[in-house]
Length: 150
Image (tube, rainbow, N blue to C red; front, top):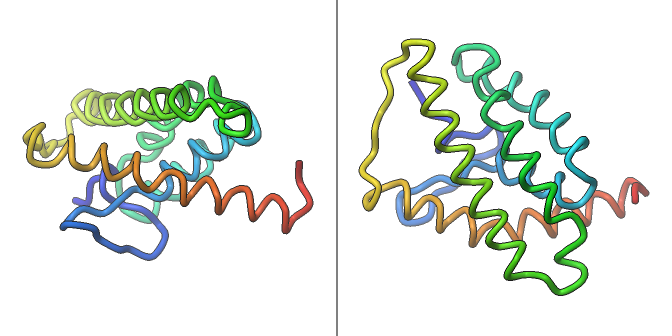
């Protein structure tokens, strides 16, 4: 079974053998841009669609994405005010919350989980997400301008 830690519904690309979770990054960017309520809404919708598409336990992804979206909402408007260091720390914490929550939820429902080595996969994937976040955030800003949303 594909793990949502490395899966997304968007076209896949890999960097150094790792695939960023574009759904997770988009939810976090949406929370920062439009507030935690908006991010949690997309976490629920995106997580449900992801679970249906990947054949995972329905609702598992949503339940892991929601606390990450809530935490990311704490950084609302900070990037626009020059608080990039604080934003990076919040995003890093939100990524960790998502990963821990998803692995714990998999254990609760009795799914066999792939427990990757921290140094081999989790930390590099966390770093990749931190590096990819500004690109996804720029995309969310551009989509907001195209659709006329504030």
